[in-house]
Image (cartoon, rainbow, N blue to C red; front, side, top):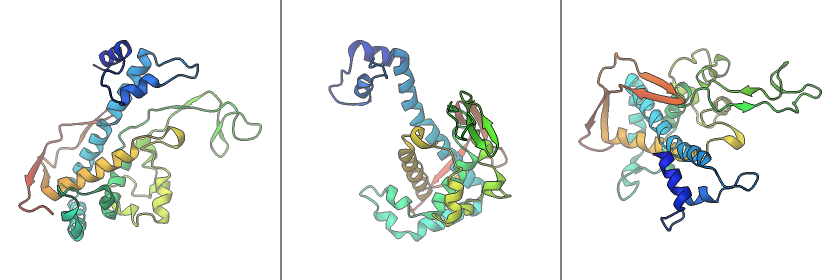
Amino acid sequence: MTEALATNLLENGNTTGKRNMSHDLLQCRNDDNTPLSKKELVGEMLAFTTAGSDPTAYEISAILDRICRHGDVREKLLQELRAVGELEQSSAEGVVTYAQTLRLPYLLAVVKETMRLNPAFQGQFSRVAPEGGCGGEVGGLEVLPGVVVPGGVWLSINTYVSQRDKLVFGEDAEEFKPERWLPIGGDRYHAMSKYLSVFGYGSTACMGQHLASQKINKTVVEILRRFNVELKDPKTPLKERNIIQMFISDLFMTFTEREKKI
């Protein structure tokens, strides 16, 4: 489907009469001032459509799974929501705002901890070590003191492993413990956040990370406010597949509408 859309875009241009992503892609130029090829258009379109939906859906599913498997965490979240009386007047539709979710520290800790243990991407998006080096006469990239990777070598971080590093996250790094991120904004919070590479770093960091955070925070809050969520079979472990990004299968849950929204 994406290839057909790219073909139509190249042959007919932007037929909507409005500026949109298609228009912007047609205006893009390579370093030699040539327009994007069909292959490049397909790649860009796939990046926008998949990166904008599937990873967010994965994280929301993983958060709900973690909450259901840890009753103490769910109860703390519900207590936090009940303590914020202004949620009911959040908007005309009664939907929480993103700004309000940022004032829910335990929610933010749960999201951070789930992203640490369930990163949507685990090891792709390689980078090339610079030729110039960073250690004086030593050419290459010094990844650790005295450990140099020669220039031109492709490198990638396995987030599943790095985000379970006990030197960074503590001896209980394998455990789901949102409290490790509290207080939000504290010294330990910032120290650990530097090693949370879910959205990447620097100039190649995820462009949609703030939109993703909005969708995750608001969706989780609204689900918990409106429904009592339970796993169909808590004894069945979460099934995940790594196909460039992580996907969840066979996650069966029951949603029982609350008599009164929190």
